[in-house]
Image (tube, rainbow, N blue to C red; front, side):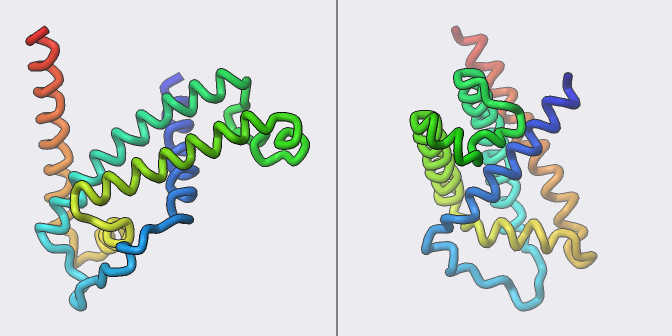
Length: 163
């Protein structure tokens, strides 16, 4: 069951990510990668923060999509949403799916804006991290993500114990 859930989340992330790439905001064109192609500590810190926020948003979105699938009895691969006959027979489903996608776009943009990073910069950092010259930042980002996760867990524990 866990494997199926992980496969679903991974598929969902890619579907959402690809849909998100279609409507880049104008501010995204302002990022210019550094000439030395080295990820700075500031970039790595923001990348880690945005990555955690995006992961949390994707997990939340998975619940929204799972509810949507259940409500309309949509298959796991959601192929019905691309079927011409289904679209014609169920415009309310297609309309709701469009609303879910629009809300995801807005959520994704707000995350990037909140942490002062464009999607273009995030994508560049993700690609640049595979280069050997950025190996030190790989470990730094991993540690940052772990640290942020622990802080989030502590906040959750404190909030729960204050009730």
